[in-house]
Amino acid sequence: MPTRTVIVIGGGIAGLATAVRLIQHGIKPIVLEKRPFLGGRAYSFTDSDIDSEIDNGQHIFIGACDQFQRYIGDIGASDQIRLESRIEFPVLKGRETSWLRAKKLPGPLANLSVLLGYRHVGIMGKLRILRGMASIKLTRLSANSTLDMVNLDDWLRAHGQDNETIKNFWNLIILPSLNDDTTAVSAYTGIELFKIAFLGSARNPALGIPLTGLSKLVGDNARQFIESHGGEVRTGVNVTSLKVENGRIVGVRTANNDMIDGEAVVSALPAAAMTPLIPGGTVGRDDFFTPAESVKTAPIVAVHIWYDRPVLTENFVAVLDSPLQWVFNDTALKSRTELGQHIVISLSGAWKWQDRSKQELREIFTAEMEKSFPLAKKARVNKFTIVKMLEATFRVVPGSRRTRLPQRTPIPGFYLAGDWTDTGWPSTMESAVRSGNLAAEYIANDIGTGIQSSVVSSGSRQPE
Image 1 (tube, rainbow, N blue to C red):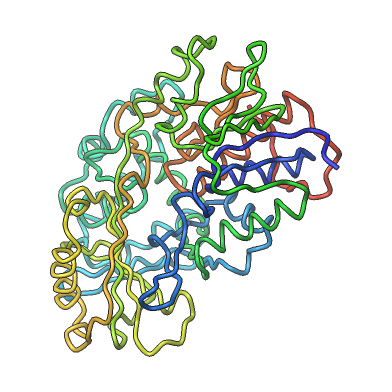
Image 2 (spheres, one colour):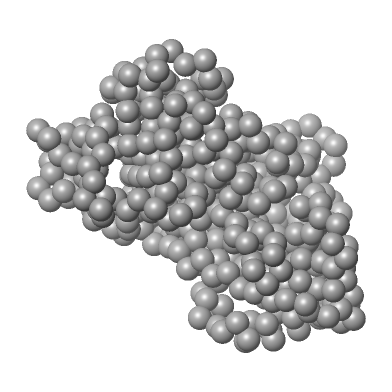
């Protein structure tokens, strides 16, 4: 049995990944989640009108998300995701569809070959994009880089890009990946994204899709793994403060005034929920934690439409010059056999839509679907619903790197996890898993491991 116990506050992907990695070090985790379900911002729920489980929004990953895929494998759910071998997806502009489809070439050549058959950018535009990619390859990113203080749009224009290439290529990738526009994200993070996705192996930008509900994929499977290996998962538990003894965090207090003790505590909460837990007067509090108070967030709105017949022939499609952005055929992706079709429209950077009423959004997006997909004109809408995630991701605006704290804090016994912490990745499921892995590694180094575990992942690494 494990000889050490660590409290993990938060049952999202970051908290669950922390717990899984702690188990792999022979340490017992106790996961405390405020809500009655796990998964954090990646969850599914049962819609009573149709008696069917739906995801809060469409979540995808890419081939470069190595630690997320390893985590899914560790919890025994590899058969519940699918990853394409190369990047390949249709892009609709007006009524013309063109594909970003990689050829069977080695390494980065495969990824750059997507431009060959892409008709939404002309020949000169493609040459501009290649020039931009060359500039990205030659750009060195360092910890003190001033590129974090510049927005990506300005950087791209300074390196030969114009309205055509930014709208029809660069922002097509940036908006869904970073949940923000090229004019709002830092050049550092944008360059980092393209270095990873397009200038690495052919597998890196390939799209991955969950094949089952998110709550089952990242929540239920993790819970089963944690509990079957001696850990605990408690839902409906609201942590209100940290327990301090001799300047060290040794447990938490809950809203029910229960005290839960541990040799260390990990906050896997969003930055805004984490900072109020820090005890006043703690050594290093202001210098270390204050930057996290400046973390900004961005909304995502998911539009769910159930049609009485198929209206989308592809599994998913990106749409230019339309509010639709990305449209997913959830029926096909989840391999359901229903007669109709469940469509999910994913709206990133959704400030324009977050305050609109359900009726307004229904009128706008059913009309946009008919405009872009002729089959929708003949279909009847059986059901329409909206899921608004007002703080879906943290923003990677210029200057945001300083707000991303490391997982080890100056308070003994207190650690951080969460996609917003310093992982080298934007707000993604990959970043969440990486943060949990790093937090667990630091804990194992600081307090020592328990018994030698038989489930240590081959992907473990020591923090730098």
